[in-house]
Image (cartoon, rainbow, N blue to C red):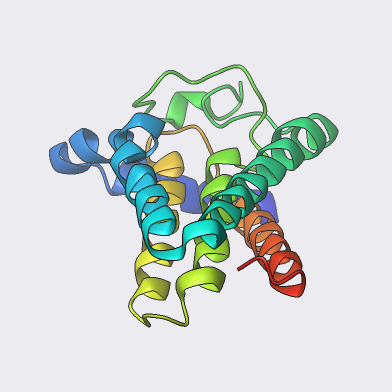
Length: 183
């Protein structure tokens, strides 16, 4: 039943939301170089405003994203071995593939895990300074995750589990750094 619901929601997003505007925009959201200016801004902001602590913030951010990527890609995906919707022989005919499908497994979405790890970590670090940071970072990570479904490479459950995994790891790295008074 859960798999059927997952496929139904996938189909609704992947085909039901189809539009030339989303076809043009959403594939870009999943590209790492598209977000390079944001990453550079966070790095410059951290280093310029927090000095030595800024280096610890960047180290924590890299650790959170790295842990989530390793956990998702090297532990969860090989263990679960769920096929991507665009590779599933029983489902792929219904999928609109807007980017190359890839040969890896689907569960959990590493894009979702990594971006939520970064977002939750940064919320921990900067969320107390400015309240607007929280919804902006969650919207950013959510848009990247949702783009994975729209382009046809992940099911909604993949991005949900990835978001939860990334959030847990991002918060854990923040809590560890806070305990050691690094940021």
